[in-house]
Length: 505
Image 1 (spheres, rainbow, N blue to C red):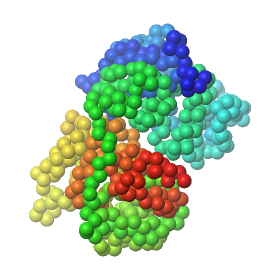
Image 2 (image 1 turned 90 degrees about the vertical axis):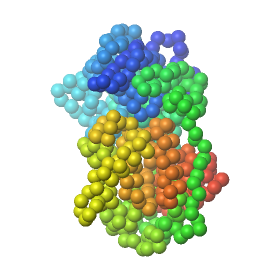
Image 3 (image 1 turned 45 degrees about the vertical axis):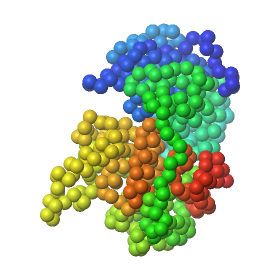
Image 4 (image 1 turned 180 degrees about the vertical axis):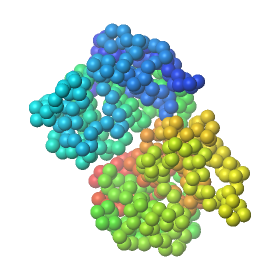
């Protein structure tokens, strides 16, 4: 079976959910949601953060029990699934963290969970190895079965998780945001494996915020909004614009809208010959007030390390940095903050937030010193005003500012990190993957906020491999390859084809 020869629509669904509803407290997560999965097809579930995708996956895999509705496997009725029943029925979920054993070799990761599920009293890695070899060979992929998983690339960890699912006789594989951390070539490799899985008759669920990839890889689409089915149908019935309209309930403006930097003033940031052994070398660039500068490159190019060096996380070995004409020494995060540099990290959940604290506490955490009166007394009224202003400006979706950050969706957690830095009024704000894992509606709103900050005179740096994002907001884009800046795109040259060509060259 090829991508142009999808599974017959006359074939009965391998899995069907009908009228599934689920509430948490008084909040309705799903309401009368239905969909059908067919063997040999990829079914994309799309929707904004908080639309119910994760809840639906948990119900299908038995991690959550629905309040009402029915599940059918090969036409057999189930009121709900337990995790053991779901695995026995051939349902496997590959989450973003892959749930692998980092200190064990690839071969053992592939076969161990199936041995546990079979209640084997003794596990022999040597005797189990042929099963791992067989799956790897059938998929036509290369994996070093003796390599510890912790030393694998993200792409190879994902392939290991897929092999593990197939050893467990998976007939339905759910892939949650499978391409978030993959390069273009790794995505192509993954899609080739997906095609092989289709040929084996596996039904796949593909959950992704990357709409072009969803349109490319899937044969069927279901769009959720606010816990309800908005529309389902063949992927050929949709394009990017219609997907966005169904997901958000409105037309989203994705055209290129850039601010005008203050080129008549001295640069707010001058980086000269910055080097860090093993990461990057001789990096030089300027940043003006009101400018949004993009830094892009393949994973491992050094783009992220440049940002971390400017934030004092990875102090450079040589070179100089000037902020507002003054040379600054960036040996620590405190040095960077004092210099007026803010940084929204790629892993904002572990590096950018206090998950157990409230939204309010997180927003104000980095700027208490800017909210003082009469010496060391905190101006509580000013604090409250700042929190409310940013909560409203960034449209953080939560009952109120006292809600814990852990309860937020990824897009809203990202807004809180951004609010925390905006509260401190940095001269320069760097963002690493500012909309990774964020739905298209939230992405538009976050990029609008960055434009507004640039309009107000802030210098903004975006480190990203999201080409549409770079095109939408950047005045200039630097191309990084093997730790060096190898090109600069300005104005009309900031186009998807040119960025992709220069990045991959």
